[in-house]
Amino acid sequence: MSDAPETVRPATKRIRSEQDHSKASTKASENNENKEDHQDDDWLKEPPFSVGADRDGWETKWRESCWCGKVAFVYNDDPAGSKICHCEDCQRLHGAPYQHSCIFHKKNVRLDSDADPKWLGFLSAHGEVHPLSSTPTPLPRKISCRACGSPLMDEGRNMIMAFPPAFEWTRTHKEVKKAKEEDRKGNHGEEGDSGKGARKVQGFPEELKADCHIFYERRCVDVKDGLPKWRGHKEKSDLMKDDEK
Ligand SMILES: [Zn+2]
Ligand SMILES: [Zn+2]
Image (cartoon, rainbow, N blue to C red; front, side, top):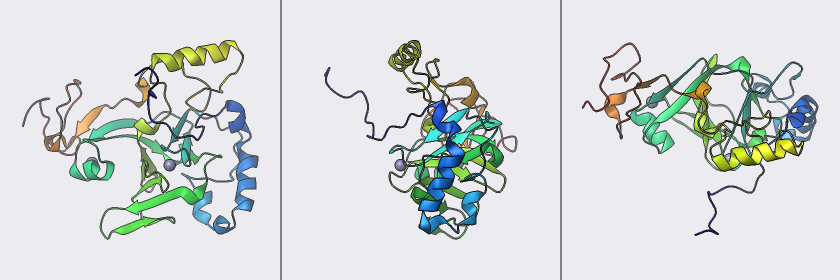
């Protein structure tokens, strides 16, 4: 098994250097001019996209990307909160036992300069169903990559809920080791994973960790992590034990 790939990875290089990000505003506006079909799309100039906006003073703290690498968002702050939802909408829409999300104000989010807006997909899943679209459907809506289908965020009026499993954080000991070697060679950031150079901490970042579970009664799996577990909405329902039915 030694020649088996460790994990399925797309060919697209998903890692970017600090330097690339500082060139972002120029690059984004150049990109804009070349993309005829998106020239009049004002929504792209607004958060959480802000394509072509001046990036002076912007410092990327986190980078989130889809599986194939065509769509990515960058964040300049830590989330204001984070929760795990076990409701059946989240289970179906994510094809997963639960959805983990982090809340950010839209002003702290931008479409990455390397991402092509034509791959953004919008889904309004409440009320009238609007099929997955390449142009915005009514808020609230889910944003995903239309190429690979990875969900990236739920967008509300002022806030977005991003999905931290799609954030670029260092998962393994091997990745940390490689990042340190690159650093020694002076290749800062080239194998980085958060948009600002290599994070040299292995494992899921503290800043993105969930603080509670909601709709825990509808769960597929028991989660014994010691966090508060609300039967329904946070602070509007009962608290449950980890294995309570
Ligand atoms: Zn994708
Ligand atoms: Zn949910």
